[in-house]
Length: 140
Image (cartoon, rainbow, N blue to C red; front, side):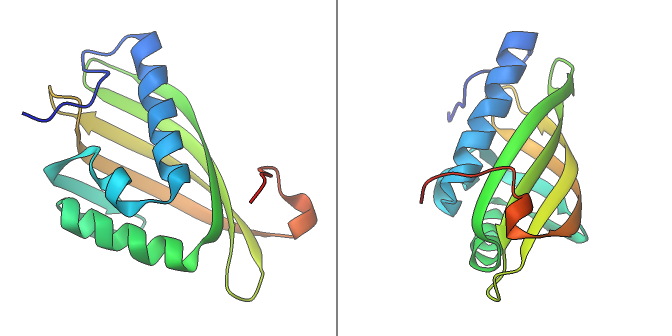
C-alpha cells in the first residue's frame, strides 16, 4: 500500500511538515510528482473546476503550469484536525504576455490513513501586479 508520511492523525509538527512538503512539490511544477501525493480516486474542487482521480489531477496541473509561467508558491498552515489540514496560500506567476499576477487562496485538505490526500477544495482569487511588486523572487 502506498504511504505518504507524515501520516494522520496530525500534530502541529506533522501538519507543518505536510504543508511544507506540499509547497515544495508544487514549486517543482512537476505534475507527475505532485499527483502522487493524492489517492488514485482523490476528489478536487479548484476554483470552478471539479474532477476526480490522479490522471485528472495530472492533466489539470499540466494545463495550469502551461498557462501560469514562472509559478512560485508559499503555503501557510491555518488549522488542522486528525485527518484534515487547512492552508492559506499565495502564488505569483505571469502569462505569455508578461503580465504578472498574485493569486491568493485557501485550501481544505482531507487525508486517508496512508497520508495521501483524498480530497482537496481550493478557493482562489487573482490580482494583477507589476513585476516590481513581486514578493517571491528566486533564481531561474
